[in-house]
Image 1 (spheres, rainbow, N blue to C red):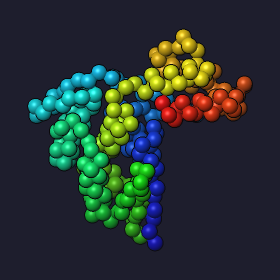
Image 2 (cartoon, rainbow, N blue to C red; image 1 turned 180 degrees about the vertical axis):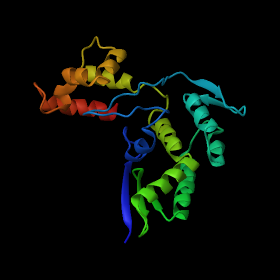
Image 3 (cartoon, rainbow, N blue to C red; image 1 turned 90 degrees about the horizontal axis):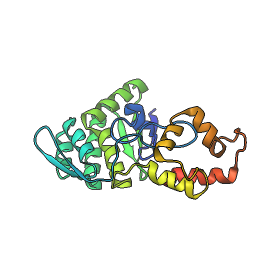
Length: 227
């Protein structure tokens, strides 16, 4: 009897598989908690730039710095080949994904992906989940799968590498969910503090909070989802 392990959608802000292995690590986004998505507190910028890897390869564009780090830390030669032109096409990422799944298959683990980017792992009879997870994690590291997955998804969803808090706060203000005088730094300070977050925005995501507003809660969720 085979064991099946579902891994969730890579593209969500807090990804089951990616965050478990790397906590959505050092590339772009922080791990979020609570009733809403916390914005990145990283150094995302809308300014195009350039960066030079240790071997002299030059990267350009909005993600130059992140591409350089991924390139320098790469374990797989295919990763460096893909990144040399400062892009990751869907076809290139699919090729990398196949290398990852082939690696897992050699360890007896079947890895498949659905149309939404979700990943499913199936372990053979007799293999414990711990052993299966270890095999998948090693193949992930050897093929730079998590780091490339985060980078690929981010380059598609946020091509100019803009701070996601900017459009999010604009949406909140537009819908009367945040004070017009609130700055991006103010917003980040609030949502990074659980007590402040509940005091300011709790009525939009916590049904037990005083003054909970179901109608505005839907608007709040829409801003979090679409910004």
